[in-house]
Length: 172
Image: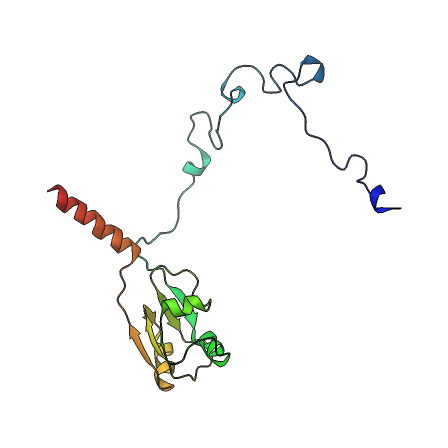
């Protein structure tokens, strides 16, 4: 057997049916769509439509709660920061903030900033400027001789609310 002789087993790959190519093809004229009606036309999207009956996704009960005022913070553990300090990828003399952590690939996402969590061993003397910090993380940083400054950030929901209020004021 040679490389140019390799091929699929018979029937392993079935060619697509070419519709609307004459009555002799077996799928001519209406091309398997039947006569008239919505599904015989092009550009029809009726996923989930049940002929006017209340669709299943609307009949089922809804559960849970989506807090529109929740802050989206990237969570970073002190153990991971210590690893980067040991690997000399993080500048110890500078203030560690969202931008610095994002640059080294620790803080992914987090539109509203970074929240420090206390998981892992931590011994570096660093100063942080973050959106939030857990009690354990604050104690670990201060025990190592560092400092934590919590900055008050405006969440995306609060920004939208403020924008909406200014639009109302302009109209009046």
